[in-house]
Image (cartoon, helix red, strand yellow):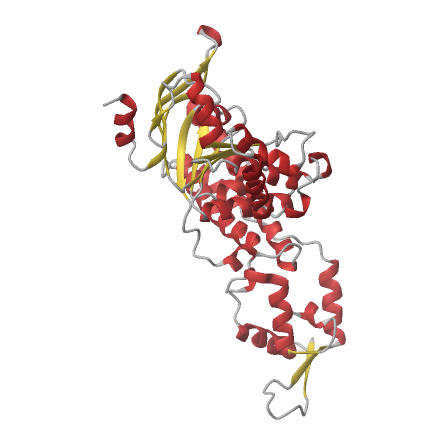
Length: 254
Length: 170
């Protein structure tokens, strides 16, 4: 049996699993431990938020989880596949087929329409233009932008651009969606739209990992991990909420 | 309640509906009886008058409430007020100091517990906001609640940094 076969059975129901994960930059006096021996298990269908101040290593962690960057040490699995030992070629295919990325600055192609941006990952994965188009239309509908298919990113608001970027992340039906400060550039109304969209993905069973310093997003996750100096310092399970007496929040109770 | 009556004399059930619309899910904890209790109190205080009209027999709620001159004055005074309800930051601050001085509890643990509670409240408020249609009256109120909880959470972060620093020094 191969190593990855063992890993698959070891990783159980975890969609994402990390053990002793490390990422270091520089050396000796200038050594920075961006991610410092992190253990993580994310179950399929879970929404996890990682919160912390800028420079705490949360973006680096996300890059490691999505195969955008290589760890300095430790072990990492995605759906039972060992990432830290994967060839560059296999890693590129995995990023394309199994991981959806959402960034603060959207990273849409300016010269392509909303629909074309969403089709692109499907075309790169070898789907036919017809199938890619059908998938893009379906996703535009899902993110509430069916009437903006032919708009260029410059003709869309920030919130609409981020919804296109989320649709693009979903094109190849990824195992996990990784979002880095997805509401960092958005006003509160657009933030609500994005949160509603994440909620609908959550209900549909999508595994979602969001790093953010926005407590609004963090509060809507199933689980919240606080990160400082490359390490996890606190974990909070948020499902359940308060006793549900909303009126108490504005002194209207009793 | 007085301010809701300022628009026009109204039945109790109309006031209730206006209040519901203004508060959305935040008003769920209020019961209908509270509206009538409050109206009776205001009537006794001379700020509201109540007239019983000879309405249709199948209408149980035939009372129409209206503002008196005194009630109108109170509404005007209330609108001009600049009071702003304050969360009890001082009490929490003193709790941290007292817990540490008397070695009763770890201030960081107190901060963590408080942060969890605020995050749960934020979760409830955020979920309610997500369920509201855009630009409803209640969504604006919920945005205020959310922004306020965020500010409190930021202060807790500052508390944590400060108390972590003190711990490291001692």
